Image 1: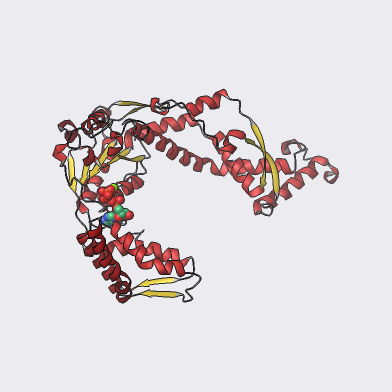
Image 2: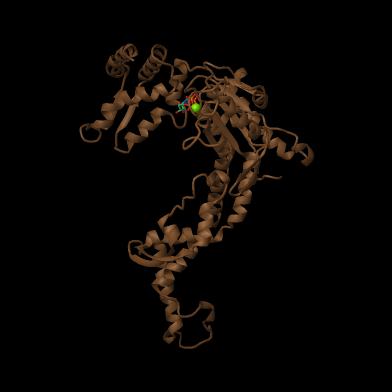
Length: 458
Ligand SMILES: Nc1ncnc2c1ncn2[C@@H]1O[C@H](COP(=O)(O)OP(=O)(O)OP(=O)(O)O)[C@@H](O)[C@H]1O
Ligand SMILES: [Mg+2]
């Protein structure tokens, strides 16, 4: 298998995993699951044919706040794939803020390098920690002679300096391991550049050329050692980190990262509808159609220079998303439309969906607030009626003011819980706070009306 790192989840397993976080939107989940599995399938195909099989790029269409970004984000996590999210509209602004379209591939490469590097760090961690321990030990009790040089047959162990040194070191090592010395101060050498976390900024646009200015400067400037004095617990971390860097072959990391980007990278292009519909926007902005034309070669497959090497974009999976309120997918230039063969619509969320979103996902909002207040020893309890009421109000406000989907739940909950969050722990003595439908009504009815009012004011 070419890429053993690609996780082999079946489509239904992928949907099951997504179900843990996203309510409903089955069609979208199925589409991304198939696209992901197809990529794995492609890996199994013979070399010649593999190059021919193209990824199933997808356009997710749906109103704001119904889970488009969330699905893509969770998918990337599941696949353990390099993932970046960009806003298509960002590319319409030239100059300082705007970036060229290829930068998304460079960001993807950066992401992949960090991903692979942290995996490797995990692999060498035990060894690096051991080495750090030895180094600290060397500072505390410098070795007289290596252990292997002790003559086992030598009589008079007790008077032997080497033997004594060895014994003390072992005793010290034990203490070190137990963490007994953690708070003691120690002075040690560290790589000055790392210690300062210094960033060398290249001249403007260097990044866009794919040149690693930092690396060039790093190689030109001599590696200076710097003395640092910290607690042993901290020193252990710093030294282990440095030792880990030495154990990792960065060249191999970069090569693997590039492979990963090419075979399993996912680019999520948000707000694609904002660049649909051609025409020039005002001022010095690049035309929207211009952005589409720039996107075309990347989605179609081209070579992009990054500071780690050339990335072929042919098999990167692109998931575009947009509300398409004003424009339609058919307003995209035909060549680009053809590159996103799969269209999936996401549904508006209903009151029943809101009830589930509040309670079911592993990161459900109510679970989050529960966890927050639990840290203060307060148990938050919502009755079923209260949850229904919150969902009902969310639906109502979405209908009356503006439909912002599940994001409405955030605004409603922060308002609802505002007092409790402020009063805990000073004013609220009780260990249990119960929220009933009545509480919700009392607290929110005014605001709902207020929103109604603000609709006219705004
Ligand atoms: N179907 C859903 N199930 C669970 N949570 C959801 C769902 N839809 C949205 N959310 C939650 O609502 C918030 C916004 O969702 P998301 O970022 O996916 O919106 P979006 O569809 O990408 O909207 P936009 O078009 O504005 O980018 C997130 O916190 C997400 O967890
Ligand atoms: Mg989004």
